[in-house]
Length: 264
Ligand SMILES: NC(=O)c1ccc[n+]([C@@H]2O[C@H](COP(=O)([O-])OP(=O)(O)OC[C@H]3O[C@@H](n4cnc5c(N)ncnc54)[C@H](O)[C@@H]3O)[C@@H](O)[C@H]2O)c1
Image (cartoon, rainbow, N blue to C red; front, side, top):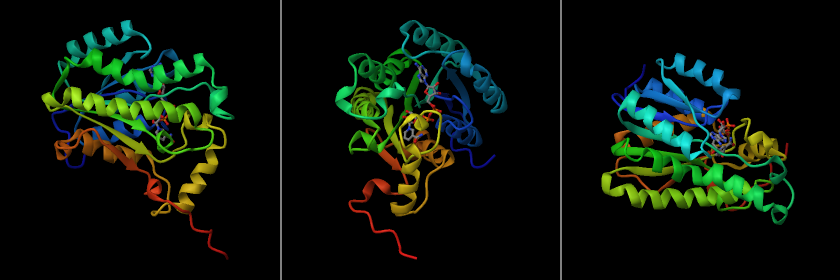
């Protein structure tokens, strides 16, 4: 156990699918910093994995919840209220895009594929906050995971980037809605990390090499790096920070031109 920046705080973590998930890295760091945790999982496919992690991290409770279901979200709110009383942090680490929409031309995206991507990857933040707003304590911290593809063209990220643009805008509007209660809403823009979701993006692996070559820090980021920033955002250290998109990407987002690779 290191310094307990989150001692006495309760956090609901969404988006754990397996040990590579960004949400897993965040949950581990929250636990190290003393937070009491709760998880949701999307269906039976990932239930065992999430329950195993929850048991390891202080015997946290986990609830089945598909964020496309308003009924499931209402049930989640009841369970959290009953079992925890209040939440001091909410981590949104959820995205989904049909694989065929993660390659090729954006103008080929179907209406159904667009709706699905935006529903799960963007609207779900509104839906989660709406369901849990009474359980969130005054001064709570809400955070969502985003990516540079929201504002810059990342080939093949396509509709995922468009859904991240919506997500980042939602973060700002929710920050305004909830600011009067001292509740903060921010996004962490993570550099590429190999996970079940990111591997669906065509040529994803090439992004990792590009970041390492061009980013000021010349390395890729890890789920621990994201977890450390999430701890800061959930803690009182960031209590004047809201409506922000905070990059954790080795500085890659700031590059305007890429140096030639060093010749050997
Ligand atoms: N991996 C990266 O390179 C990267 C970079 C920047 C941002 N992100 C974002 O980080 C977040 C987490 O992704 P990840 O890379 O850890 O991948 P992941 O596949 O491990 O996590 C995605 C999670 O979304 C959940 N999910 C999908 N549909 C859901 C639904 N209907 N209801 C409830 N949960 C649902 C999945 O169960 C899974 O746990 C996503 O928002 C992703 O866009 C990832």
